[in-house]
Image (cartoon, rainbow, N blue to C red):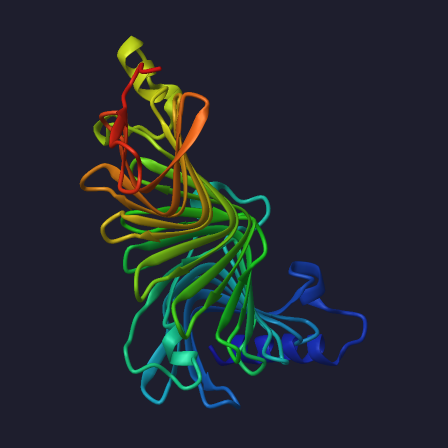
Length: 368
């Protein structure tokens, strides 16, 4: 045993001291050392305590990067409160400058070996930190961040989920000092009652508010709407669309559970689709709790040959009607007749005008 130990010591000495012999260059050129069943922990200069557990790890020959493979649990906490917990990833690398990269996909490996998942409490990094602890599930193909610089970039297959809100995107940058997440690609937001998408978006983490820009689309039950810009306030559960809004209300809601109108078949269904009510306006407010909506500024409602315009319109999802008020006009044949109010019964295809008109009248389906 002693002789074997002395022989091993001699080999190690020769490898270290010789300029001509380097076994590590021959075996694993890019690696200085390999480790198994790794458990690392430490404290960042900003005060966060970090901990990583992985199956294997290795250090580059330049000692510039430490790479952990098959990470099964990693966390960052501050003042006894987790910022990130339950991090799992195919690979995690750390540089001396504390640049951290989390990788889901390693080139050349099969899909079953690809994984990345973590839970992050954005309220814990807000300034000041929120008292309420709410973790967001987070996954992406690649995450780069530096705890000292308080900045992170997520790219590829991004998925965020928190309290019924699901987000899908391809690129997002997070500024923890400003409490802002900027989505730089087409992004989908979906909660329990509405789906929203836009070319770009900014999420204000401290106020749970989202601003969206570029081909904004909102789908809710039997309604769809488009506009150049919109915002969503998660506290009051309201979507505000602006810049010129075009919305379509289908009837009845029971036939519109399918994802797209192209799936409708049969003569009855086609007639139903032809009975869409179109409402254009300058600005539209949508309540995601009760599915009601309020339209403002140059409101125009049309259903088949029937038309009306006003300064405001209130849509009731429960009753299936639109009430138009403020400088109201309704078209009858080729004339526009002024009224105090126009009520649009979506399912019954009736426009009813009342108030300051010579005679209260109704324009029904098929009337001339």
